[in-house]
Image (cartoon, rainbow, N blue to C red; front, side, top):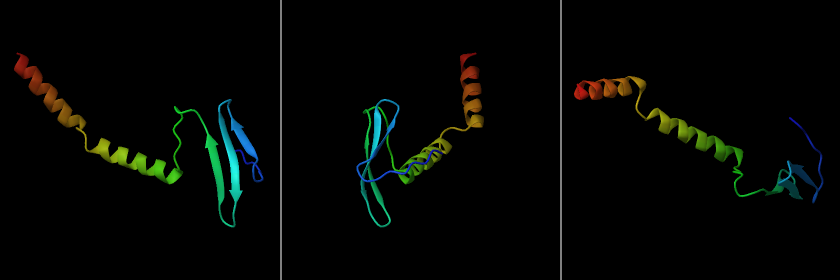
Length: 80
């Protein structure tokens, strides 16, 4: 992990098209602004983790490998 010390209105550039700017510094919080191209997805970490968990749940509800094998065998039998 790369750690920076920044003051209000200072920034950090990632690559050539992403900029992070320190907007304000409070007692327990730092407000940042992020400028990035539209194709770059940006989420707060807790939102990103929630999305990952929902994706895992959705994947678990999909057809299992054994169910898929059963469907394949039924389709092959029907073709004969």
